[in-house]
Length: 274
Image: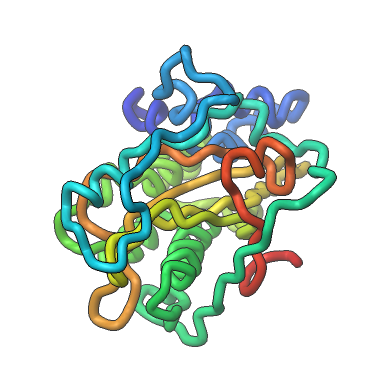
């Protein structure tokens, strides 16, 4: 596996923290639980701390579209920098974060992904969660290509540089599985938090989803994984929008104080274990 993929994706140091004491073959497999956490941390300046706040983004929810400059500013604005351990299971906050209600996708769309989410920022969050969960739970190179082709508009980074594809590559490469997950193993991704980082008119949103991700081999290991994506309304559905990837989202264990501090709202609605 090339160093560029492992750097962009999950990182072996996360594995050692998450699955210490697991047998060697299991250690190789659950490297997938590191996701983009390691890359996000290594890409952040060492001067950042868990007390850092995202830089302000002008007019985060304008009614009228402002265009590409504003969109790039919203997407690139850094989010809260958190310590690597924030993604591990932790103590729940005494006062939960406010809820955000995410609608369901009532029908199956291209590449088998749920669709029909409403033309709202919350609908964009729901669509992103459906795309992300399908990629992570399938852990299949061919399926990930199909999903990206069906759901990404022209002008993006391309499937080879898509962070979710790089997560799949890192998982499969570390486990020496070939191009898809062994059927005896499972990955389950459940949305537990969300935030709407910014919008530009009614047709463009940076949607963010906080997943609780569990891999099961001979024992379970789990982390929280935050992910953001530009989303654009096109042809009656939310799709992955063109442009550079959004800044890395903070990966925190759902429901903790640091998760609240990072801006994650409690997921309410379709897909979560409420």
